[in-house]
Length: 230
Image (cartoon, rainbow, N blue to C red; front, side, top):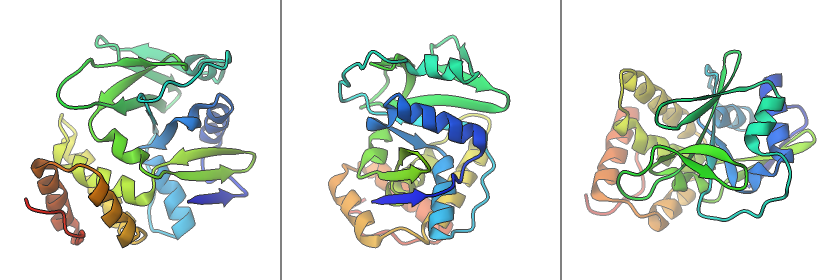
């Protein structure tokens, strides 16, 4: 599914960042994730949602070896745009510019693994987390002015949020859970039932994952297609 905007729905600094990321070839194997795709959905599907975040999250597909073009690495692109790299003790890297924080995430299979991995050819350090591969199932291409990006489909993002809402940890877990469920409630107005069913059919769901999804659905009053035995 492709959609187009003659005028960017994003703030100018975010538009500039996305344009440069597209020039670097990032979106061939990357996605804009987190809350910012909600702005695209709310504009395109006319959904009631007010974006209030300065975190800009990107997902990177680490399963495909992307050939190097010899161009700028992503850290070089961000540095040119005025972002400063900050790395914590575990190796997770965040890029800061004013109030904006840019982070990169990749899929983690199975149990625990390294806290950060470097993704070629962009030389970006990404945090491995579970269920990120779900976001790459039939993503949307969004054409904005003179560039294009990719974001998860509303169905994939909703299913992802239904899962992670019940798995939040840390001091702000309740706030993040509430935001996840709020986004799911909004997305429920736009998702295609047949696509939800198709993703559920092809994506491997453990019993624990199915329970998490059903708990989130109960919280927002949404009924999923059958998930199988729980």
